[in-house]
Image (cartoon, rainbow, N blue to C red; front, side, top):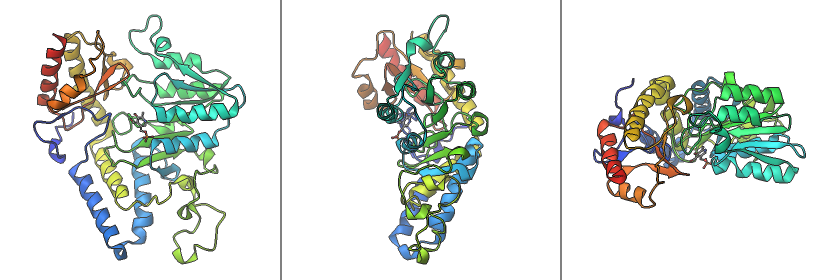
Length: 385
Ligand SMILES: Cc1ncc(COP(=O)(O)O)c(C=O)c1O
């Protein structure tokens, strides 16, 4: 159990911010790293090769360590949608094949597949809430529904580790195994779990895995990581930036155009990936997460959400049992639905949660105190009277 870490953030005592699934606040150390990066760009004569190359390499190493992957398989991307577009550009889909997603999945991980299916005369296969909560399941069991839905017709399975609306969990090792049996590619978006829920890329072996930085990685907005399985390292990038080509370290020689790329997954990097302020911020954030360790974060947040789930149950609100949801993430459903003005009323009291689909997401982190949770429940008690 990690002790409270609010002192590392800029959060006033009267703010109950229980909304990490929306966006994490930035640690003071991460803000400082950003300010240092801005200072470098303010005086470009101080920019060095380290800013262009070494910091990017360090960021790849840190993310690789977080998911037990290989830094050479990590590309630097601005958004989950960008990483998913790279996956869609490279994965083959045949006529009448299927692309499997979950119902109400995050749109950046749906539109790209709808477009690919349309272009390939293939079909979307959406695994529904009804299938996942079918006969005998006391909650949402995506894993069983997915293993049934994946078949020889499946070309791609694209999903997250947990559902972004309520944290309902997918057993990725099982789903990956089923994908391999069926000959389907696996594409993961772990934006809602990376940094807070353990994941081992060497065990699951997805074809592509993306994670945006600004939620559970506690980093800046417009920065993310894409892990590309070595079998796709020869694939097609979205753009053709100078820095992704072999020998780009030699600025004087850049007009000796190169057909060859930098090694590994670097060919997939976004343009201007060196990003003098965002890159050091992302690195500082992931460094702190590695210091806390993901298993300890997961354990600490699981205890927090379990206590919240118990209090929610005492008000007649429904949550998935712990074994069917990611421990860091809680979705709460109200028997009568959620009143449309409720979020605004809570925000007026400086209590912050979010609503996605029919679930209220209550997603605390290490900066939350008992007092934050008490304030939320005083308000919810009034709501459910
Ligand atoms: C599951 C998931 N993926 C990705 C994102 C962010 O996507 P993008 O980086 O494309 O804006 C979010 C944001 O809420 C999300 O919940």
